[in-house]
Image (tube, rainbow, N blue to C red; front, side, top):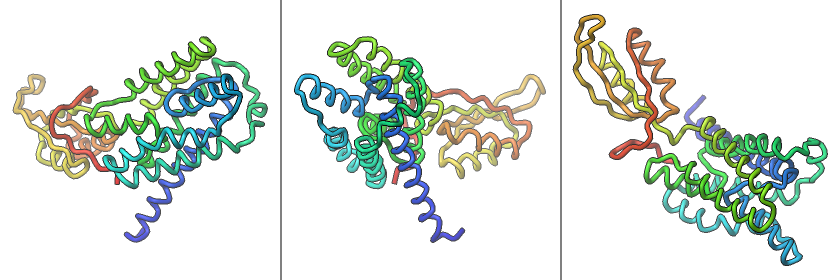
Length: 293
């Protein structure tokens, strides 16, 4: 593969992931979410809520796509300026395609799936929703709305913001439960919880891990960490009581999705290295993060 082909293939990969994510999200809206009469939370759920309010209390239906676009306009502008231009443009492509498909995709898919159990709709709809969001994140984009907000918080404060987004979604669902059906709102909370749990398992790009590495070859291992992740490390001298030998402890914090490759590389350098991987909740200080664009 030549250097000229690499950017083109990477762009094609991003486009495919975003388009597949948009199709899956629209399909989910027309099937599991529609069949279960769920409010999925976020700007998508807020769009559905606005549609339902207009229909029940105003007697008219507004297009899903138009409402979704209007809600995402301000967050998209902020992300365009703060996060990155390509990231925002790919995200807008996802929102555009998802909105169009949701308005025009036939409703016959509900009968095709033949799923009329609300709990099953909540669980499997939540999983499919997480998959569609994860595909966008893998492409260096997002599904928009509260995801824009979550990405902004993660970029600026280096914190996993999905839990906070879940709380905000619950507030939206509480309003839906008050206005319409409480049981559907509770099922929607199950949907959103499933989405949050599945997304945390599928995508770990905004999570960090602390590596504690006991080794006899600290220089080579630090070089590996530096070259593969651009993160630093701190060494501590110690004494290994099991073998009665002086040892070196390397301390480093890396992104969660970099851990597997690092462990393989470390054991190639030092097969006897002892590695402890710890989940990191929050980082205060300098931490390298690759830009979206």
